[in-house]
Length: 256
Image (tube, rainbow, N blue to C red):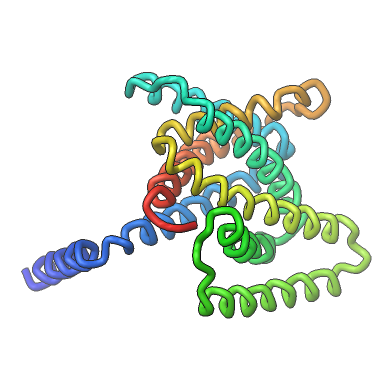
């Protein structure tokens, strides 16, 4: 009884805090989305290592896009206006390059180091959001971003120093850093997109555009899928879709 009462009290305290501080809800949704994305990254790294980045990413986009297309239509989805459609197309193309370069680098880099290197993205997004969205650049955020950037630089330097003879590792680091730059741009686009479209529409069109952007390379890059890869990719598609919708919901309610 005491334990159940304690859980109930904790739940009520949490709900009360959320009501008093509604800005915590988008933050909580974003934290959950990043956690879900991290699990998806691990699944996609395993699938990409087994069957190549291209096949895993294309299949993930097709699966997620097909399911979300049905959900979008079932909820009465209508073709978006010009402004929203332009953002869907632009963000989808950026996301295709971002994801392809990230997973290409991730299969050549230890998971922890690859994830740490990718964290320059939100740091860059701080400044891009100030320039393109007019958001306030707070002193604490600037200090935190510089401190985190120093940590990322230390990780990269240690990895390169330990792998001077391993060209694949260096290429992997470069690919992840390139992906992080695209991800920062993606975050700014995500904020603008979330203000014009529902989370379901965002998830559907992003997967649709990514699949369309990747499709022309099918004759050159497709490889047969290894056993177990379809299951990893299917679960990755589910997790990626959940994360996309959580982020779209959060970014519609808080600054990037």
